[in-house]
Length: 303
Image (cartoon, rainbow, N blue to C red; front, top):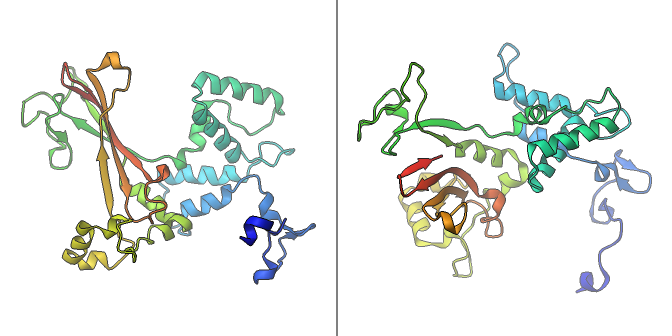
């Protein structure tokens, strides 16, 4: 009630009355200069890359090379009269493109105008392709899996080398000399995204915060009978709170309009159940792995 009535102390950034010590980072006026940073790109890169560097004699992978390009761009200013690095500027522009659903042509037109306002030696990428290339280290890798044209099977693992469907006998590839698959599924591996959650200090802590309720009411899946029975059946798995439990969900909807009822889209979502009740169903923790577009007239699926 005291906070509601009187509010919190103004400009109280360093908690000197609660045990914090004013360090060298304190700037004139009593504020921490980290509070005024335009971005936290360096912090993001540290959490993304971790503290483990590859051996000096080991050639970095393509993903690692993309990450190193981001590291270099985080320290490279767009030009000397701004505080924005190439990485922070491109990240903001790509975020705006996504937020306002800009087309590539719209994005590049805005980028061209920005270049006309900047000095000629600015370090901002010239087009959308170069912008995406700069953020390549943040992207999620995906796996392309060939699918039977009639959706009978996946050419995956033990079936990876087969050229005909075991069920209907349909050819895997288009007719011709080049082996072009007739249908391809794109799968976003869940393991990579779970590793991202544990790479961030805050989400790593949340991933271990699921606890049974003491109120006797079901407020989290861990209060359910299925969860508790699983813990009894697999005690070695249950003893470590870092072990991940997942929920899968899918549902169909019409992606175009009600007039195109024969077409329906079936996305498959995965969400970790390790989070506490306040975070478990937040949109940022619900991952899309695959999706299908179904034509009931021709029984065709596309990934």
